[in-house]
Each structure stands twice: as C-alpha cells, then as structure tokens.
Amino acid sequence: MKKSRVILLECTDYDEDKVYRTVKRGLELLGGIENFMRKDEKILLKPNLLKRAVPDQAITTHPSVFKAVARVLKESGYNKISYGDSPGNGNPTKISNTAGIARAAEELGIEEADFRQGEKVDFPQGKVAKNFVISRGALDAEAVINVCKMKTHALERVTGAVKNIFGCIYGFNKGLSHAKYQNADRFAKMLCDLHVMIKPRLHIMDGIVAMEGNGPSSGRPVKMNIILMSGDPVALDSVFCRLINLDPESVPTNVNGEVWGLGNWHDENIEILTPQGEKPIEEIVKKYGKMNFDVYRGDIKKAGFHRVEWLMKLIRQRPYVVEERCIRCGICVNSCPVEGKAIKLDKDMGTIPQYDYDKCIRCYCCQEMCPQKAIEVKTPFLRKILDKLACSR
Ligand code: SF4
Ligand code: SF4
Figure 1 (tube, protein in one colour):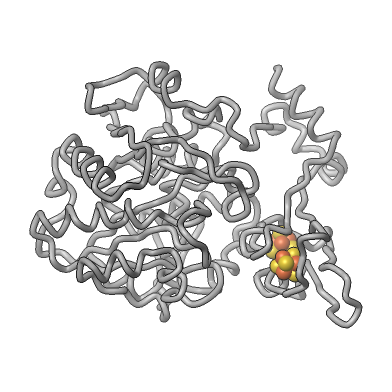
Figure 2: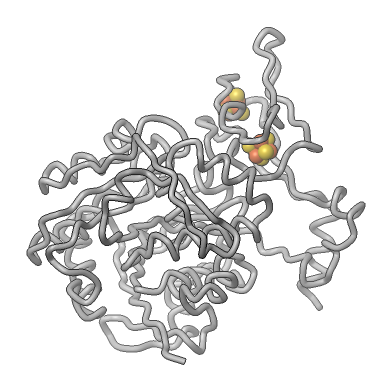
C-alpha cells in the first residue's frame, strides 16, 4: 500500500509572516501546490467558521493561517479563488468578519463564495447518503482546499480534516443531517460520502492553538504549536489523534474514512515529513504531543457493552445546561434538529432549557451553538467505570 504523507511544521504563534513562511515551506514539502490543482481552476478555501467568534477563542480557523494559504496561492499564479463556510447558525458574512477571515480575504482580493443558497444534489453512489443539499459556493468550485481547525468534538471526539467538510452542506440541512444520520458511526459514514462527492484536494490544519475539552465551540484554547498538511484527510486526522494521546481507531471518521478509500489511519501507512526530514510517529509525539489533552478517550464498544440496551440508557452521555451561565436566549432550542424538539425553553417560567432525553439523539448541535458555553456533556459515573474496564482489556 502506498504511504500517505503528512507534513508537520512547528509554528509557535500567529505572527503573519512566520505563519506564511511555515505554510509556504509545508507546501514545498508536499511537492508544490501545482501538485494538487491547476491554475485555471476555481478554488474554494474552506476554513472552519462554525459560529461568531474572535480568533483567540480557537473556534474558527485563524486568519493568519487562512491568509498564508491564500497568499501562497496568489503568488503561485492562482487567481480564481473564493472562500466560505456554512456556519451552524447565523450570517456567514458576519461570522467571517468577526473571525478576521473577511479582512484577510479582502486584503488579497479574494471573494466571498455564496453560502447563502443551497442546491439538492443526488449522489446515488453514496454508501449511506444518496443526496445532499450543498451550498452554492462549494458547488461552483472546481477544487476545494480544506483549511480546518484542530478541535475536540462531542459527537465524533475530534473535528479535523474529515469533519470540516460538513460546512459545505447548506444551512439548517446540517441539523437535519444529524437527525437523519443518528449516532457517531452513521454520521461519520455520511461525512465520508460527502468527501467522496466534494473531493477536497488538500487539507491544512491550524493546530497552532487547538481546542480541548468541551469542543467544538465551548472548550479551552490550548497551544499545540503546529500546522499539519496532507492530501489525505484521514492520515492527517490520525496524526492529530496520536498527538493528543487518542487512539485513531476510536474516531469513526478515521475508521470509516479508510474503508471509503479517503486515506489511511494506520501508523505504518503514514509517513510524517518535517523540514528536518522524515520522522517516526514516536519522535513526533514525544516532541509535540500533549498526553493530557482533554478529549474523551472511553470506548465501551471494545467491551461490547453497547449491545445491552437497558445498560446503554444508564450509561449514555448526555448534554446538560449549566444554570449560572445560561441567558435563556433559546439558540439551543432553535438548533435542535429533532422533530418536536428534544430541548425546550419556557421563557415565561424563566427557567433554563429542559431536555427530553428520550427524544434526544445526542447530536450536540445545542452544545455547539450555545453562545454562553452553558451546555456541557456529562459522562455518567457508571460509564466512567465501564470505560476504564474496557480500556484495560
Ligand atoms: S443557548 Fe445556551 S445560553 Fe442560550 S438558552 Fe440555550 S443553554 Fe441557555
Ligand atoms: S437536545 Fe441537543 S443533543 Fe439532543 S437532539 Fe437536540 S440538539 Fe441534539
């Protein structure tokens, strides 16, 4: 099997020139941007613009990384470049402005792509998803560069290269996808079909400051001091997992991604190249890894506990509202994709939103969209014990 190449570059802050030099060097190590796309193609830069947030919050791709990629493209003679993402909620232009992406794009004369309209696209060859509603801006592009952010994710454990392409789906159809593809495994399979359809050519991960804990929007920024690049999104995400002491096999987008032919997650099929030469994963982890990175590592599947339905009810993780932080805005209710809503807010009563856990499909859209970081994910005590048992087998 041909090995996938992942480029790892050290970069300790977001100084624009430093990031630009780092990204440029990384692309040289990958053989040059010309290896991935032609100069006459329409290119979409797809950052992570999950929701309105300033760069320091580490929710969105940092503008320095976005700008560096755009600058290298421009200097290499690429002129048909646009950018965009469909956020979980809100106006894409306002979100790009707050994230600093709009200003970076304007400085380089890069247009905002149309993520305000979508179109249904049939995809009969999909293994689980037979159609998608895709944002116009993604459909218009001939080549997509995925400029993703290194973060944790309540449903898929991590959001990296594979998960970031979800933002090509238009508007509230993202929420509907959660309702249609319930559970992490089905959802990951849909994401893999989406990748097969969109075929992003290149993946660049902003891991200078990552997000740990209650990601992808309510966690803590944490310095990882790296940028990762690859033509293989699965290999890139797998290296990300190793760096945060997470078994790549426990991430459904990795395992399914390999089955779908998107790339390799096994260490032996990945070559890690740095400006100092090829390095074994152990050396990379020793130098850049964060063993206590706050990410969910439990895996009850390995022990087969998930097959016992009554036990699952007792041990399923669940979102909950932290009363002191909640401002009763109702955004969580609006973002819930379940018919009849699995979370409700009675504004007249003045109470915090209440969950109906029998209806809740654990998609965590409410947690992603809460502007106050007021929704956290609880792991029941019994689950923690079972996770420990499973890990020790
Ligand atoms: S989105 Fe957050 S702050 Fe707003 S009502 Fe829901 S839990 Fe409270
Ligand atoms: S309540 Fe939250 S986690 Fe449950 S289905 Fe609705 S949005 Fe998803």
